[in-house]
Length: 361
Image (tube, rainbow, N blue to C red):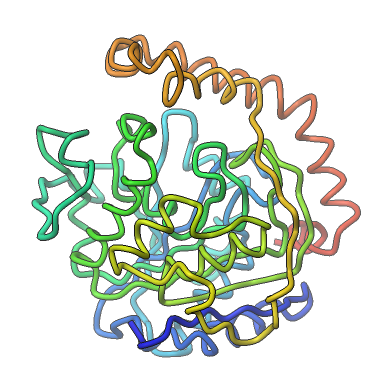
């Protein structure tokens, strides 16, 4: 890491977005943080397999980052997908139009849940974990493909019902933890700090690119209000980019535990006063975002942090967890999206320049 954390922030336009991304990565000095001799993993973010503005990596984010890195000498790039108990990675990459980008540039795609692509191996962290050794007493298992590779995280700017915001730190959650990652929700902030420590141990290099062309305000990472902001961001420091993004969203970065913990541990810089922002002046930007809950998360949060926490082991470490999985899946995919979400998607596609750009992919 450089002596002073740097975050590059630019305004982007649909008609020049690929050039904007190239300028962004060069401004953030991606080549300082990534090893040209190593394979580079593009770790996109699919928070919902449906198209929903602000929820998922955008196709222009994926394409722009790939092209910029390729032009800078990173020839060996591969996209790695993960799934969750309620998200279908194959459906997500198709509906969010990643597939046309993959095909256009012959980008290999691997899946951390397919044994033919990678295996999960036990890993003993060199540093002391805060919570992962307690959550997974049988051992911490990571995908073997990630070791010795560059990692480029591709999150979007959005709120999250469990972490207040979500960005580069949270993007490692899906790639490095298996489908039992819901075990960590009560200690999610400490988990993200542990995962950053582990990433610093296993990766050849790390870089982070956040798309905020359409950001998500409200009970994310899915049921949000799309907000056009036109910003794109990049940094070699995942803590710093998250801190600046959180500040732009209207949150105090150091009041968010995962950012504060990582800052205090020296894993990155979370204090905006210690971060150099280059490109756009965003010192007075405040989107006044708020989080809240939807019907599904408003209920289950009581098991993570509320009076029902004592029943957590019984409900979430046994087959009873599928009751909650099916409940979340049914609510989001068959109630909220058809009756609320699809209207917002159609409005975004029809009335915004970013929506019209999406239609062209």
